[in-house]
Image 1 (cartoon, rainbow, N blue to C red):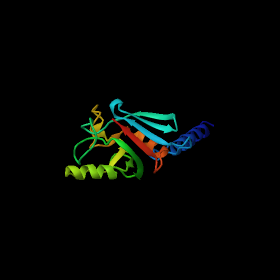
Image 2 (image 1 turned 90 degrees about the horizontal axis):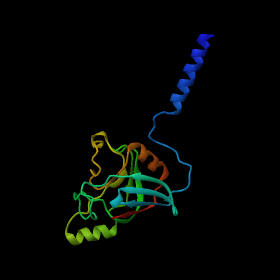
Image 3 (image 1 turned 60 degrees about the vertical axis):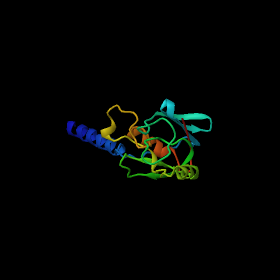
Image 4 (image 1 turned 90 degrees about the vertical axis):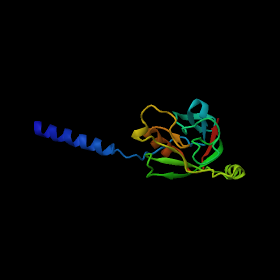
Amino acid sequence: MRTLKLAVFAAALMALAACSSGSKFRSYNGPEVTRIIVQKSDRMMYLMHHDKVLRSFDIGLGFAPEGDKLREGDGKTPEGNYFINRRNPNSQFHLSVGINYPASHDRAEAARAGVSPGGDIFIHGRPKKYRNGIRDWTAGCIAVTDREVELIYAMVKNGTPITINP
């Protein structure tokens, strides 16, 4: 009898382990994220369903967070209206969701200044080497925890507008 109980207990543990496979890909069946709002000064990002906040996240920004991004390598996170245009399931930052920077107005501004606007701006996770308490460390991206980017990756679809405020 004891052997049977142990076998049943072991089978239950294996079933639980299979359910929590450790996959970084989550599913989401809640209200649609209709827009994302980033408040750089508050280091906050909000996933919105119309006027209702679905989720909020503390964020990290570029290593020079004040002001709008103008050129490649300036360490600034862009400001303005963009949209989510791609996703990277194999990101070096766990998962990442791409922002369509540079938009045409960013390219025009950089051209007037005679510089490259840069690119590859994402919302992404935080690798171990940046889990040391430094908040603003990216090259201009928006950073959250790995677990948070898993949720964002599941909730946010391509085409979702994102407003990044100063």
